[in-house]
Image (cartoon, rainbow, N blue to C red; front, side):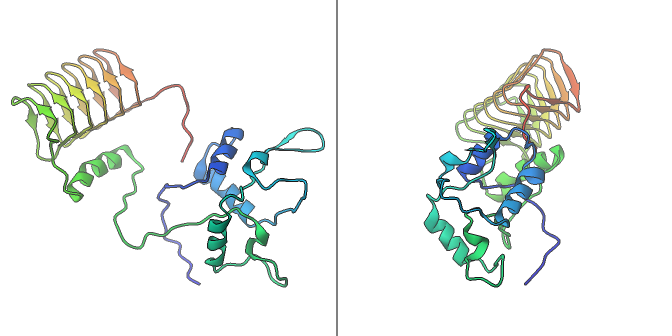
Length: 258
């Protein structure tokens, strides 16, 4: 047995549909890493209760208790039984001794961790790290700096360390340095973009100055706006002449913590 303590969570989770349905029914769970994963691990290592009145299907996961309340326990469907059987056979761990029962006492819930021994993986947990990673990734995969369908004005100043996506329109007197511009984005005249990530379908009006920021898809940056070290959420609109520094500008919907 090898015990490792230097592993880092990559925050990439593959979940069965039953787990997602369970999350929908349990609004109190607000963190995948801090609440959902520990719950799944506890369920995996706990003995299942065999009850003939309970159907082994995801549609019956919300069972009625004696007092009529809803029991929000997680039950995993048997539809993927061959795959689950294969996972059990390849598992070198057993949760009990002294009986002939199968590992996990026949439970169908499994939590696994995949350890990447080879390859490239970045930990992106800050705005600056996200920007640097997006700027580096195209170079690693040898993608072109400017997509063939992008329209770039001859009077645009663009550094060799920037990436322009497909169907982009970049107007004249524009400066783009150390930045990535997503597909179908419109950058109008006299705009300065430095150390930033501009995602798909963004519109940046005339005279804007964007530094060290991430602008998510379909956002609109009003004329003359000045953004420094900001995160602008999907579909958000920044008013003209706005000055924003170190702000997270998102919608009213609260995202679940990873």
